[in-house]
Image: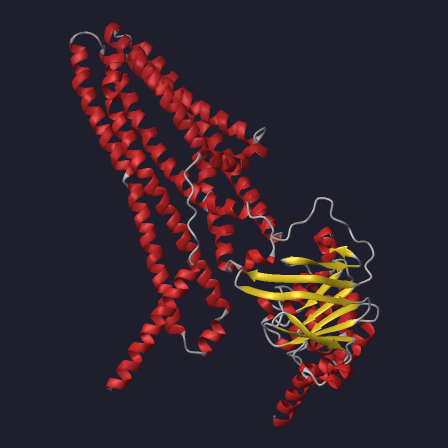
Amino acid sequence: MTEEEKIASDNKQQNTDKRTLKRFHYSMDQAIEKPFNWLQMTRLISYMKPYSKDILPLAILGMLLSTAVRLIAPLLIGSYALDHIIESGDVNFLAIMVLVITGLYVVSWIGNTIRIKYMNKLGQLVIFDLRKGLFNHIQRLSHRFFDQRSAGSILVRITNDVNSLQDLFTNGVINLLMDIIMLIGIIVMLFFISPELTLAIMIVLPLMFFISTKLRRNIRRSWQDVRIKQSMINSHLNESIQGIRITQSYTQEKENIGFFNQMNEKNYEAWRNASQKSAMFRPFVEMSGAIGTGVLLWYGVHLIQIDALSIGQFFAFSLYIGMFWEPISRLGQVYNQLLVGMASSERIFEFLDEQPSVPEKNNAKKLKEVKGNIKFEDVEFAYDANRKALNNINLEMKEGQTVALVGHTGSGKSTIVNLISRFYDPTSGRVLLDGNDLRDIGLDSLREKVSIVLQDTFIFSGTILDNIRFGRPDASDQEVMEVAKTVGADKFIQQLHNGYETEVEERGNVLSVGERQLISFARALLADPRILILDEATASIDTETEQLIQRALKKLLHGRTAIMIAHRLSTIREADNIIVLEHGNILEQGNHQELIDQKGEYYGLVKSQFKVLDAG
């Protein structure tokens, strides 16, 4: 490799690393810095409330049965059976105690079976409700919410974060209750047998409390970091799959793989770090248990020697001490589950607490009849503080008119149609429909009267019939076919192997861009809107198909208000009003001939476009 080639290779690698670093930071979800609080955990547990009268009581009953048996059995074995047999040598009593204790453990087994069955059922129902509620809420959020987040980031919260709560609901909550009851019961039994020995062993508890307090904040932050890294991976996977054709076209597979490997390594490190910190808790519990056992042997034997404790009591006390460290150890595991659940619930509740930036009033109007008169009064709009899209716009689109919006990219055309559909609200001023401020109209009521055909057509998985019917689910097959014929889609649909029943797969990849646009056009027209918005809708359709659509539009747009955005000026010559925009300002408006006669900006656009066509 020559020196020049080496320098060029190094520069390329440096630029790749910089782009990768920028993409890495862009993909990062922001950490949610909130203290661990039981109020939020209470909110999470409140999802169990609908099942608190039927399923939850059965699970608690099963838990209480097994817990009661485990608390009674050591006392029967040690203080009663063992001491009685040592003193009296009564073998028959031993046989009776064996049968009684065996029966108690059968009851414990039945209780555990009931607990596991109904807690699993409860956990699945809660996860179902939580995921359903989260998805339903996200469906109602405004476009600004989706502008600020990647699809992968949203996906990971609905799937991974909700799934991570499954163990908490199926095991964690009931185990927490069971272990707390068990601990209290064991402590009562220990004090009942020997208060002196119990106090001696409890010396190790302050040490455990101190250690767990120090660990829990670091553990919580570590699991939150894991969630962030998983969100990054999902976001990048979604982007990579969606953009695979562009990646391969520009031979950027190595850069993409390198970026993914970086995220994968960081995810691995985050998991390793969180797991190591979580794993530290159990050894500390076991160490504390070892210290407690040492105290038990040393001080317990002393109490036996001075006749302050019997051998049977010592044996029962030993059984309880063995049981004592078990729930403490499990509480550490449950606490880890709570930390993981807190990290996930913070991210879930962040979405659930998100309010639409386009709010709907409680007394919003329900539109029955819409004429289609649209008016902008002193409208300004900015996507953010540094990006103003519209400046003091005043315009009127009359009922039944076809209005065309023309201008260079970034002039404000799409912003105007977004405001008409109320995907955003004006920063100032107002948009009126038939004299009603859009902010006073119910969103569903408004959008039922508006249909949009976009340049980037989205086709859902399913049949062509289902895709056209999407905007009006109650439409008959015959109505769907009639609309398809009107827009010229019937011809290519009939040539497919299953006609209208053809499965188009995800995003309609089996169809050409033009075919997808025709389906989208038929979908919009089937909805029978009063207002029809065509955003570069004919950009990818050949001239012959476009002429077919133009002929159909003359019939279909009669009596409707239509707003068209088109860079191909030949498609808007028949518009009643053409509005020319530049940098969010209206430069001029009028019909095609009026604007040509003015020889202004529109005239220049037409002239330059025909020059390009002639040159081609």
